[in-house]
Length: 165
Image (cartoon, rainbow, N blue to C red; front, side, top):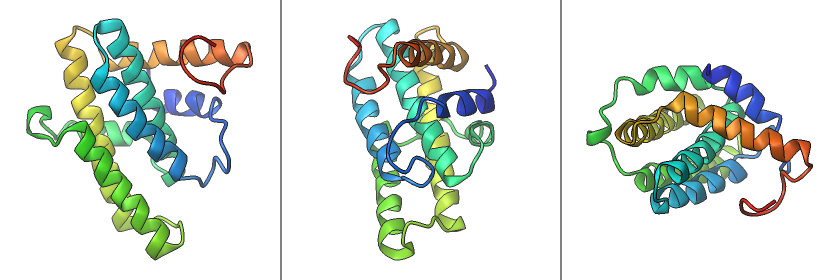
């Protein structure tokens, strides 16, 4: 699956306040899903949680005006084994979003956008490493995530909590 297609399609399932400018919701969701990914056991659970992490990566990328494909291409330069943990990367994103709110009234300056792209790229790099280790891949994860989301959208249950919707 092409990442920009995933980004566009996943955006149609984004239903939260001020979706075009809200940096808080996708950032908090990213941290939450990284925690769930870390706790997941088994390939099916790991794929599901990786898809949820990627959904929030895509929403944050869209909000800051960056194509997911560009982020992915920049992730190729990183070695997953030399990266910070997913939690450390999520914390760095939170720190930058905090500065955007405090110092820039919610408008992301280029220097912070570049850092956010770097952190998101590293998250993708680490996710891919785990997926390959479990004989999966990012394309499969993205398709599974869209299938789940569009099923929920069809049934009008995008809002809610957990898998039993």
